[in-house]
Amino acid sequence: MIIAVDGPAGSGKSTISKLVAKELNLLYIDTGAMYRAVTFMWLQTQLLGRPYLEEKLITDNDVRKAIKKEILYKHHEKALQIICDNIKIKLETSDSGLKTFLNDIDISEYIRTTLVTQNVSHIASYKEVRTFLVDEQRRISQGTNVILDGRDIGTVVFPFADYKFFLTASIEVRAKRRLEDMKKTGEEISLEELCADLKRRDHLDSTREEAPLLKAHDALEINTDNFTIDEVKNQILNIVRSN
Ligand code: DC
Image (cartoon, rainbow, N blue to C red; front, side, top):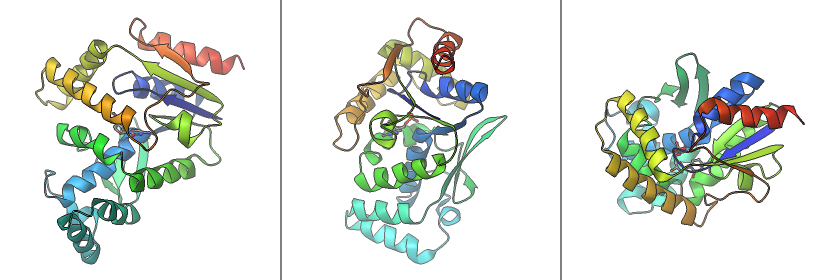
């Protein structure tokens, strides 16, 4: 069984998908974490990421040199292709939450930083990155019952998914949810800044050429503004269980 959950940032996708996965014993794939992992690697190669982990992430010196050379000459597509050819992303659900590994290094604590969040929509717009990650998502899902959340699951990754949901929420509600998430990481950011960032990412995600954020024609849209997490989870469970 494949369940696709799409929607903009802060619509509740990952919280709900995790709970549904637990309840139905499904594998949960947070595809946003995969785009964040590639973005983290990209920032690392440009010396922007902190702390500096690049050598641990890609141990082959020639590969690192090749990526840097392409970046230097602004061949970003080529640099991203080399990155994609040389990384392995693994997601693991643990009691302390979802863990993201890049070439077997746990990068979970780095992928939610403001720096990664500000750059991920741009990196996610490259065809090289999308082709690599969509293939990975299909490979990981093979032969398993799975719930994936993202922007293009019901439209591109699994257009024939058994169930498709499209979660939405107003910008104010989404920004407040993100603020709560950010408090946990200790990063200081205002509600206004979060609203502006969400709008910017919505715009980039829904206007890009490759697999834009879009409701699949056969997806059920749920506005989560006035529902609790449990209510949305139960709506989804009822639909899946009644079929
Ligand atoms: O769900 P998230 O906020 O962690 O996702 C981070 C970014 O990754 C988001 O701004 C757009 C991109 N993304 C995407 O383009 N396609 C997906 N399937 C998932 C995420």
